[in-house]
Image (cartoon, rainbow, N blue to C red; front, side, top):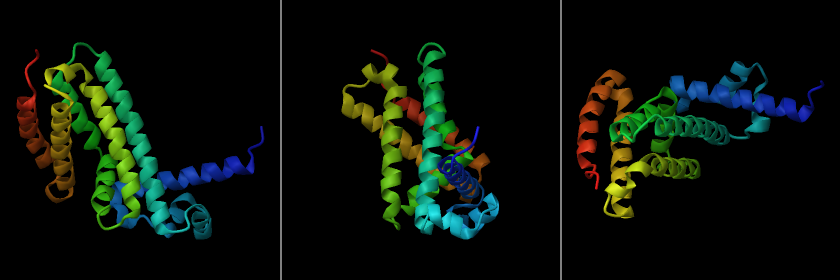
Length: 198
């Protein structure tokens, strides 16, 4: 079977995005350049620029690619956790931590922080945030009736995500080991905020 040019171009584009994600995860957003991607994929720099005319386009494409992968993995993990037995709030809160404390999620956190200085990232980050909220609602579904209303459920989710995000952005400064210890204390506080079952 012969591969079409369009399929080859798309395969090359996907390889570029994967290379950008790997670089972003290992060295940070600043390391992602057209030259580095060209070297990684063994294509010319102009080939990278064909797909991503600017460095910003490359960054935004890599973040979207990464966000889609994280969201897909997270969705699968949440569905598995929901099917694993009786609802367990600690398991779901811990799952949120495990999803957002991976090296790839740490790379997205860099872009989340950069969105304040680079408006082009805002749309990508906002789309990911909406997916996270939808996934959070799915994960918290078994516990929704414990909250007095939808506003209280959203407040709890905002608090949990804010704590996780704050810890995640501290990893490069303090190391994952120390932040993991801090997470254990934070998780106890979050569990204390859960209303008792009615």
